[in-house]
Length: 557
Image 1 (cartoon, rainbow, N blue to C red):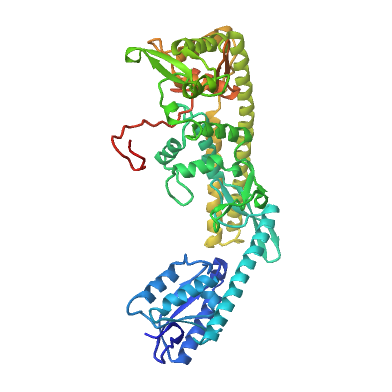
Image 2 (spheres, one colour; image 1 turned 45 degrees about the vertical axis):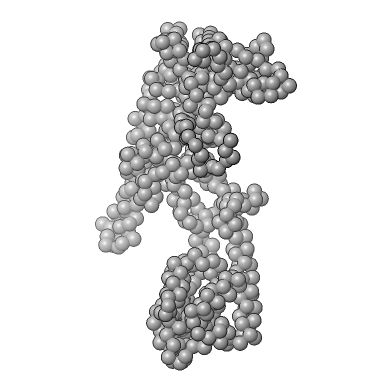
């Protein structure tokens, strides 16, 4: 085999053609690749080379090697012996727009006796030609980066004006024509009537559950959707990631964020490079914030597994008022008969860290639960809480009525358009066999039927009963909630109580209990509705004892 700079293709060489365009739009126009093919065949014919294969890459960037046809070609060139002697490209930029990568692959080909030849930049293998190729590759790389910079700038400006830049729309939305500018039609995001109802269902499951359980986590929501045959836009099954993306994406409250992440650098872009686009909202800000708080409360980073799985009533929410440290379980006596809450700072560092305190577990648990029963569940406070619940319910019913009316109007508009199309067919103005007309009729039918179905489901969920806050109702409600806080054996229901409380601070002569109104309303209403658990289900893990060394190597005593 000859040296790298002495490779010369013989007159009877076998040639492989590599044809590439950068974007899918260029491939759709079907002009560049046929022209490259024609010139390559003419070039090979003039050289007396035999074309033994073609590798066509429509819509692939040459800034990296993540190209299927390119890799298939390199595999064929790496065989011994190689399947061809020369690779023909229109220009070196078709092969690579990165100077380092171009030289790397040229040398890799040369080691197996394969030469890279450009039709428009026909160079030899002498040192001067190698230098010229490297200089041209540097210019190609610079031009590629400049084009990318200007393209991104134009896309960001397009997003600032509220238009869609392409790619698959988020679940629950569709792309519609918005404005004609010259020969180009600008696009925008609009609500997809079919899938928007699924988005609302996902948020409802995350907030209140399906009527049989409390708020559902991402995995159980995915199971719920998959069991009922609801699929993703690509026809696949829902997973935890897809559900979590829907529950955390600001697009659904009317703010779509463009250019958030750099896939080339594999890291988020700076905030000043992110563009916020106003789009139609599917979910209210209140619902989005409520779901966000629920997801945050379940995050394993915020609550350690030992607190989630612990049997202590106030584990994870009980803290020392002096130092803010957690008060953890301490035991004493034979068989750990006596159990206490103790300041962990004092337990680790002694009185120099915190003067701390220790309180019997049963005593603190009883004090906290009694306070909940006597103060939070007092009739006058329950009346205020329930009045707030009813007021919130009336507001939701008003919003639901507006949404039902909008759905009915949407269905009526689609039905009117269908009627006009049918009349045009009857009068001979339109051809019933026209494929575009058939697809338009099918689309309008889908919109009409989906809007009617969504409206009927929403009407079925509405309650027409007017609730009056009588003393009997308030008393019944209080008794039911109290019964859910205590077990039949005299113990307490940990998840129910932690659904009402956020933090318990134990001071020298006082105990400070905090929570939020939203959690209180949700927990109390869930308790009165026969829901299994008023608190959002938390992740749990059970530590297992592993005798001996594990995979995380550590010094052995």
